[in-house]
Length: 401
Image (cartoon, rainbow, N blue to C red; front, top):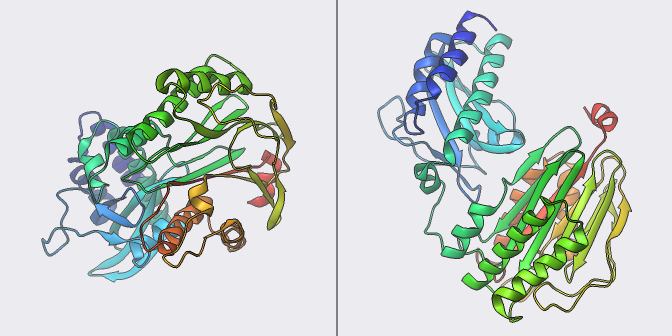
């Protein structure tokens, strides 16, 4: 990497322990300059992934404050969408480039900078700087209200504030699975929620849809999430976890509120999926550009009524490369102003077409949510949540690369 590259990355790491989010652009500019990088600019994505928003205090070469960039029609946005380095052409004495900021498969934002000559060595340095910067941003955002306010473009309602604080990040990957999720409306979430976590070879998955669109709906979903996590961390099976959620919601609301949901566990070594369905839309399996299976079972009642469950867990064996699709009714029941339903067929076709075009799963879901919002003229009548899970063995991953 060379002495300049090592000094750049090492200096950022050593100085990071006492660097605030607000000071990060200055630190990056200072340590990047000796490596030949100038006019650095750090942008993060807003909550709905429509805009790239500059970190505070940054200015362009003329001294003007940096402005947000649209993700769908800017060169910075192209780097975010494609998850690749984008060359932006000549900028003064050098060339302007944009690099995606990635934490695993989660897209944090982009880094822009000017380099005198973008050869292979400089490109590697840019990508390594972007990788380190993404890690630094993630390490600081949890304790930063500056970050939380920066990525919001409008006030957030209480139910959404509570749920977003509980939800996992919207993209995760290891060498066996890729998980991507999306949820709208971002600022007035009612009762939709998703969850996932890894324990050894097991990927835990859940999607919930609580009754209503108010704070009580958010509380119902919060109870479902908390009970689910509490039970799985005590090694409870899926049936027992669903029954505990049922009891927790009933105890809180006296059987006047409920949540539907799917609780699932994927053995990432074998591809065996186990799940329980509590009154929810069945998951789907996509394989080879089509719907291979709809995982319909005799669903048990929604959680919150203490009606008891009889069906028990179901099982299905995935094949390498399969994609699981979990969703709530706001996805398929979205209606246009003229009453046209978005529909299951259009939903599935959208995902399959983008997969065939080589679009990443996180970008596919970003575009899907925008399409559903456009279908309803920007105003959803119901929460809309979707989660995609791709399973691949290590051998399949090597063949795909």
